[in-house]
Image (cartoon, rainbow, N blue to C red; front, top):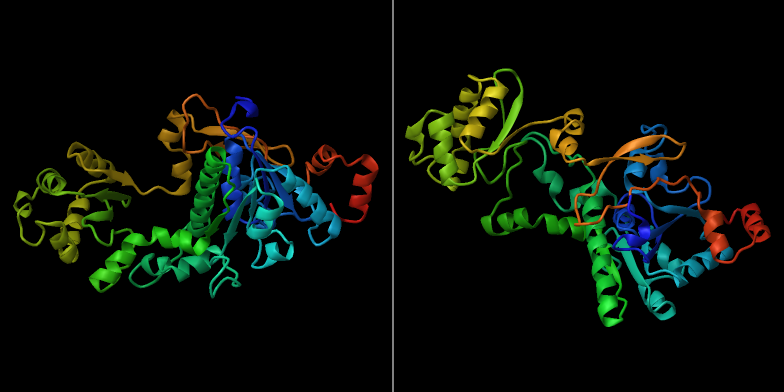
Length: 398
């Protein structure tokens, strides 16, 4: 394993007053690349995401996913000593990330303007629900609320029923933009000497991901339909059930693939130039008729035959995996994407490597910290003696 000081972000210190998903996802990626991430948690229970579930050897699946390679420090930020310690940490840090409830960071006196005055080299990153200004600045926002507000839920599900996306897409989107924003700000500071504040909201992050249906709706007069695993604006593109009861999804992206599908899989070369299906728009307009033809052909083959025939025709396809099948995916195994990570209590779990590979760099896959595991070590680095640390603990500051 490559030592942290040899990683791209070695020497960068991040202090994060974080909870839940969005901010921890951003900072974990910084930690993967060697940044020192000091995670500030509440004394006692810590980040409430630690208690979302207990499925990973007694630990939360969310927390284990989002918090490896970090140091946990507990501080009661409602106390004067707790705030002073946080400010000491910030005075030596490069990046300050937070995703507290609306108004909380201002009450701590650590909004972006104040940080710029007091810690001019520090890059603050605020992750909010709907932005730190505007009419919804004071509203709480959680992932599913934002999925609803951006219209994503109206696109997801069957014609009869809407559905949430199966993962926390608003949180993940915000975390990704926070991560890239922080990297951009670090680069700007290195090249210009100016520390620029970063701000990301869950709503605006997911709004960006809604760009295509937004254009389609604004200029097409109606929004894309909600049709399960079918693609709303491309046909055929979706999952169909083979004779053995297993679903296979395939996609037609252009007229060459459409001709191959007709000639080699459907065995209906007459359909290639059928005016109902000759163009992408025509196939969408006649989706119901097309689906009947495809479904009939799928019913003549088992899923293995379907995939073999589609492969032979050069048409992209995939079985519709459940999570167990994903975990056993041959690509992850053959490419060596799994690593063991230690979690609180001493157990180890399999964790996926980050998806971006940097040539010559082995990312850090460190332990998931227990609540407050590093508090005394970090305080000692700040110059606190054993007696002072004991007094802070006795007063429930840490």
